Image (cartoon, rainbow, N blue to C red):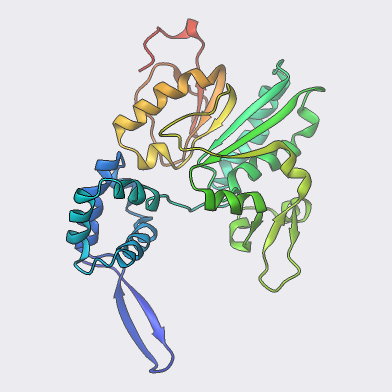
Amino acid sequence: MKSHSIEFVPSFFQFIFIPLSSDNEIQFLQWALPRMGYSWPGFRKPRGQVLKRIRSRMHELSLSGGYEEYKAYLEEHPAEWNHLDRLCNVTISKFFRDRKLWNFLRDELLPGQLQGSHAGTFNIWSAGCCNGEEPYSIAIIIEQLSKEIPAGLDISILATDRDPKVLKRARKGRFPAGALKECTDSERILYFQNSETTDGDYTIKEHLTRHIEFEQRDLTKSLPDRVFDLVFCRNLVFTYFTKERQQEFLIRLRPKLKPGCHLIIGSNEDLPVINWLEKASNTHPVFRVRSDREHDTNYL
């Protein structure tokens, strides 16, 4: 059965039913996504966002023959695959997504990690940072743990995304009220400035931005040139990529992780079976990197 949305037309006081996604659209995604290294199941929920962009692209190309014509266009113009790949970028996020995880990080995991760090810099990576909610959430947690940070230890948060448009929004640090639903009242007061305009937006306070560096990077092509103490890779690789691409990513990621480092994935995600990561929590998707002595030399 097809799902429908309802559009209200005031001039006629009627309800018009508009299909959210047709069988042809779903079939197109099932055909196209694996060819780009993406997994169709990961796109089921956010498919509306992606399909809206694809419809706009077909209109831009004056393709009136629907998805079959767009398939033919892709086969005749290989460069169009790069454009379609960008259209598949999912931009859904909010502050403290999966709040119980963030409480675990603040109350149990990070205090020990920070106090046990002997390096000059504690490096954190937010991969696929979207509009910035995740790296700013990290900065808030670090602020809350300021008394746990040893003297002389610098905190560096690298936030990367391949989409320059979302990075531009992230750098502004301005968010609608809906993005702050998981924030407590005290967090809204301490860490955000409420907009004076009628739109009700919130802007992250400037002192929280000092830890964060935003960088455009497509992690399917390259990874940052540094080694990390903590990596957030949530609701990205292990949701939208095929299993083969997930394993390729982990092979390239391994040298970027310090022994004892933690990798955090999404609450509904699973990792491929590997021997250099172990669960660090029974209730949260947090994994610890084993030292070379704890596993053999085969990473996967």
